[in-house]
Amino acid sequence: MRPGRCGHCDNRSGERNVANTGRTNNVQGTDHPPSARIPAIRHLHPPKIGDTAPVSVVVPCFRCAHTIAHAVASVAAQMLPPAEVLLVEDGSDDGTLEQLHRVAHAYPPGWVKVIAMPLNSGPSAARNRGWESASQPWIAFLDADDMWHPQKLKLQMEALAKDPQIALIAHDMNVQSRSAPAPALKTPLKVRVFPRHLMMLRSSFPTASIMLRRELPFRFDETRWRAEDFMLWAQILLSGYRCAKLNQVLASWHKPPFGAGGLSGDMAAMYEAAGSVRKALHEQGLLNGWQWRLGEAMSLIRYLRRRVITFKRRHQGLFLAGRNA
Image (cartoon, rainbow, N blue to C red; front, side, top):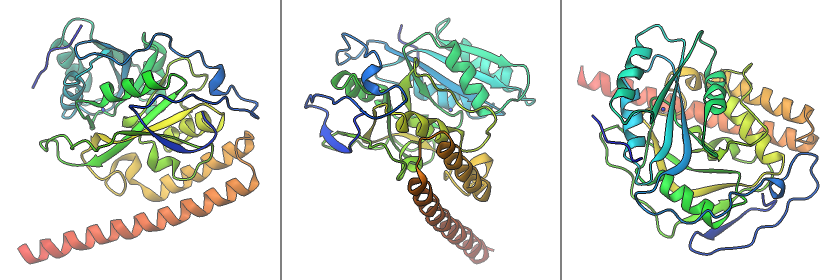
């Protein structure tokens, strides 16, 4: 059923062209289930335009009445649309739930499903509720104020068809206005398989880019309201599952991802939360001592860089406001 349109591993790194099919190696030396033990989706062929992707899209929704229609419209505009969209309302008090039902009624019956949480429980609980309610073998995440490129699911499914051992696949994101055209695709299109370490993991795996196997034995940590996505991606990667990334911008934020309000905008709290995640990973045996210390040093460098960027943005804004006064 195609929705109508209307007005949120391999243990070494490498890149390969999607057009080329390569053999995958089993991951050794982990107490957690390696990707070789994940049952690959059999008979997964490159999709044809007009097919439906075996994907459940999970969108946590909290006070998003003004943005959710745009987010869902970007899903409906997919060249390869997903089988279903799950809008998980997380205890908003601003009319979001009513808006979700209006959005659902704009599409074929049953394609958009609304799930109402009784209380505001945070993005981890909302995503987990959608995950458990999903009917498809793949889960894709979208935030209610973000949008997808029309070819996102098509390109990700084609990459999975070439490498069925992948358990999680991501891509790049950019910042642009909602009215801007979709970013141009790069050539050649490549897939990078990530090594089992945390270097640059956080910036490389933005949540709205992620598609993963529903059967993975992990979930978002519902005790965390910050860095919960970082925690999950790290557990999957460091447990030996095959994680990959397309070299394409296939989703967009509509505000800078740090220093711009919201939970992620509180940079100091995010820095502390990421440190807490690395400590938990160390306690779980997924990071050894030197990896933990290196991760702390790299995180501090990124945090200081972001503080400088945010300061420059605000200074430039004040300067322009003064000139225009």
